[in-house]
Image 1: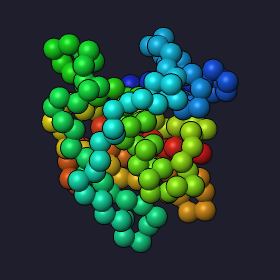
Image 2: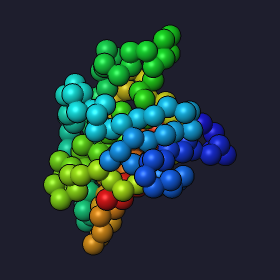
Image 3: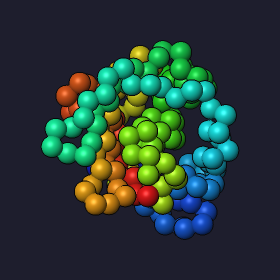
Image 4: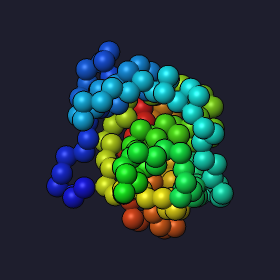
Length: 162
C-alpha cells in the first residue's frame, strides 16, 4: 500500500463506525467478507509465541520478536502463489493476544481498532518486531509491527481501544 492509499476499513455490525474494527461480533470489511472473531479464532491453532520480550524503557510497553514460520497455517489459500499473512490474523493472533498477555485487564474484545494501516505485506519466514505501548491512564494500546529489528520497516500499525 502506498502512503497515499486509504487503509482498509472494517466495521462491526453493531456500531456502524467506518473507521474501526470490532472483535466482539461479526465485522464487515471493504472487501465484503464477514468475519466473526470469536467464532473463527476460538479453535485456532496455538498463536505464535515471541522469541524475545523486552520492556520499553520508561514506558508502559513491550517490544516482542515474533518469527513467522514459512508453513504457518494461515498462509494456506491467502493467496496461492504469493502467500501473505491475513490482516485479521495479525490483529487477533499476534497483536490482541499479546495485549491480553501483558495487560490482563484488557483481555477482552476491543471496542475498535483506530488508525489501522496495513503498509507492507508479511510473507512466510518474516521475523516481526511488535511494539506495544499502553497510553498512560487509558485502555488504549498503540501497536506497530515491523519486519526489521529497529521497528522502522512498518508492516501494520494502529491503536486498540478497549
